[in-house]
Structure formats: structure tokens, C-alpha cells
Length: 294
Image 1 (spheres, rainbow, N blue to C red):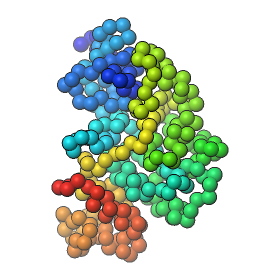
Image 2: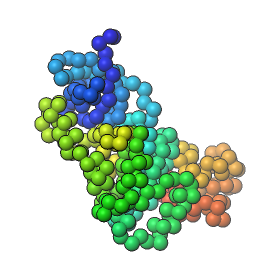
Image 3: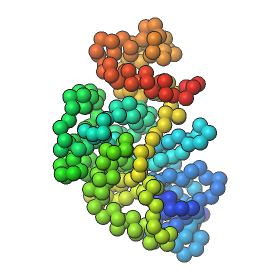
Image 4: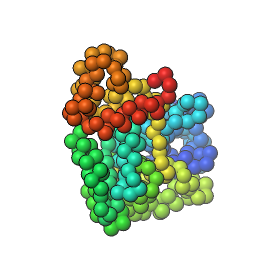
């Protein structure tokens, strides 16, 4: 076992996996019996040829984000994340249902969350301000930025330091502009991964881990990384709403679905305004979206 080396998974490249070990990047294959290797994974690998290796073991993950895959299964989006930063914008119209879905998944995965409002150079609506106030009241940090005129980026960059993070959000919110602002030498780093692994151009659709110049790592996942509800059941979804947590013990029945159940403390709190009625209504919509049997 002495020749097993530890490495960090940076990206998937075609059939290979780019693994960083001791400041070198090696193109590795993965043993078939292993679970799907994700960007951010720590692995043990063995050299099989110059600049090439074979991943033999996945080290335990402290967290993993999953997305829906075929046949009701899930695939990892990224591993060992400390925080997810959900990007939304003044326009296009904010999908708060998707935002609540991300929050519920992160709460259940033990991953911190930050909210990033982009395009603040445009006037924000009263609806956005009201929703932001309710998220801040729950303890979620909100960063107001504009990739277009570079405001708020220093505070956001400081929040990313010293941890492994990912930006996510609906399409059109300016995630790639923010990523390019946070990683000014992104093109150079991307080319380094491609060149070192002798695999031509690095595909832009693959998630990639970049080391930030101020310390910390940012996983760039192009497109909309949908974290499905497939791996959550109804009690976990309810637990994913911070404001529900102290109320869940007060429901009359242990198997309360928090919909029309008798003696539901969550529904009562939404009706009296103790918790956000909007968030409760979106919770009901997410229940309807969940796979049957959950």
C-alpha cells in the first residue's frame, strides 16, 4: 500500500479524471467497483504510467450534493463542500421555489448556505426585498453584488476564503460572470488542467475545482446544477425549513404531513404570520413535486 498516493479530484475530462497531487495534475482512471467519483473528492491513487494513474479508493466525504440521474437514482454534483452560494438576480424573475429547494437540500446535507443577489445595478422589486428580509431573519447571509459594475465582490470573495464552495442558481442570473470575476485567471487554470493531462481542451460542461488566490476552493459547475429532492423524504424536507424546526415537535401527530393534518403547528404558524406564509406555500408545492412514496 506504500505506493498509494492521496489526491484531490479537480475535474472529469472525457473518460479520465484530473487528480491533483503534490502540485502536479495526473490523468486517472477509476476502478469500476468504486462509487462515482465527484469533483472535490479526496482519493487514493496509484501511478500506472508517467502522468497517469488509477484511483483505487474514495476517502470518506464530509458532505456531498446529489442530482437526479436515470432510473430514480442520484449522481454526485460535488463532494466535501463547506458552503453553497445560491445566486439569484433582480432579473430574470427570481425562482424562490428553486431557492427554497436548494436551501432544504443543503440543510439536510449539513452544508452552509449564502444567498447572492446579483445585478444590483438594476432597481430591485419590493417582492425581492420582502423575501430577502425573511431569509435574513432565518440567519442566512445575503450578499448584494453586481458583476456588471464590480460592486460587492470584495465581500463575496472574502466569504469564499478558506473553504470549499460552489455557486448555483437558475440560468441567466450571471453565475459565469461572477465566477470569472472571482477567478480572474480561470482561463489559465483551465488550460493548465487540459495541458497537464494531455487531453486537449477541457470541456466547459464539466464541473471543475479552482483554487482561489486568497485561499479556498471554488467548484464551478456550468449550467444549472439541479439538486433534486429525490433523496429527501417528507420529514427531511420539513426539517430543511429552519423556521419549521422548533414547531415540528408541537404537531399533534408524529406523522404530520403539515398539509391539512389536524393539530399541525407549522400550518397554524403560517396562518398567524409567525412564519412566512409564502415559504409555507412553496413548501406545499415542493411536497407535490416529490417522488411518490416519499
